[in-house]
Length: 555
Image (cartoon, rainbow, N blue to C red; front, side, top):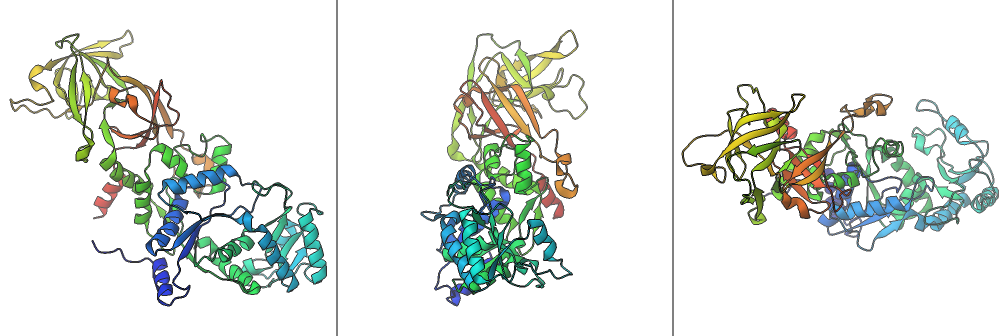
């Protein structure tokens, strides 16, 4: 198979390698902020940064941009590390934190003050925004812009000591209040936040802004190629200004398009709202687009990496149909998930001509796509369960499942024919009376008769009672954010819980995270809420492949 053509980032890197721009080095980093769980958009950045390093025999750091103690915490750090490892990547001994560099960042800020390139400003945050100007109008200079170097050094040191109230002072770069790029209009470098840092404790009363910290971290770690999403393109000129003024190492920043999905929001702020206001059950709720949520749902690392690869790397943001992600999951699980029989909405079938005390055990293949998956034994007896919607008392012409007088095949077992229907006092069907053909053992006969319908089933005597959780999109609209209030578009049917489902006994030993194909029903995974007494399954994805149909239609 020919190598895949290089994307535009790889072309830049290969040119740098040819020109020995960084002495033959390729060193990337994945730099999340620990203020929420990572989501599918971050998966693209993870795969890109670690994949680039792997392809060019370089290195990739895992670094946490923990510069805001108001929103960050250890929970998010641990979750992100688990996500990166689960996706199959290793940062080895290169785990870093922005907070490790706070002292160095402070010293760099002092250097800029001494060069007359930074000053302490007393404007409030609202005043700073007001003075900033607009895209068509220049900003106004702060009345504190021309403080002496000595005064700025004194005030900045006192800010560090905690002598001033929050919001009363900031340290700003002195650049150009008329610059066409608003990011260059004296941006804030430090603000006063009197809150302990989850790693630094109460050591600091001032914290660097993201714009000040981010480029310094890349410089300190000698990153060669700083891969950022497109919203940072307008910030690149500021990052380079900071590094040029300090005269320190400068990486090459390259921007690529963000990954967005239909029926999903990926804003951490909005995901936080969903969690904190109880619209979902935590960051790892299987309806969430977080990597933790996808993992709990039953998605596989291979499927997510395949999805990221298929979406490609471009210079523009893109919105990808969620059906493509589901397609990648199906393709992977079709090869790896063992087949089992589980009845989600059971109705009892009594086979009246089958001996009451007899039990047969049939061989069933675990996965026709995997010759090494082996077989399992499934029990068959006089009473079984089938799906309620696999029976109709008055079926339409092309109904190929069970109906009065109609014959169907039971997967791996026998042909059965419905002879009678039992109902309760309200007219609801509660039991089907059937007969079986002893000569159809294994689900086949030698007389050439054709049976179109094949049903899954479980033995009533041996089955397990399990809970099954069915998931739909969390939002009803392809673009939930097209309305002012995205919460209005939450899907009230995003979760349906089915109790009293019946599963074949081979699932007794299933462990949390195990994945299966429930015949005719979809792919399912054992949820972490399962107990020794009760298995709980999440539906990962249905068997229906919308994306494949879209592709076929396009062709």
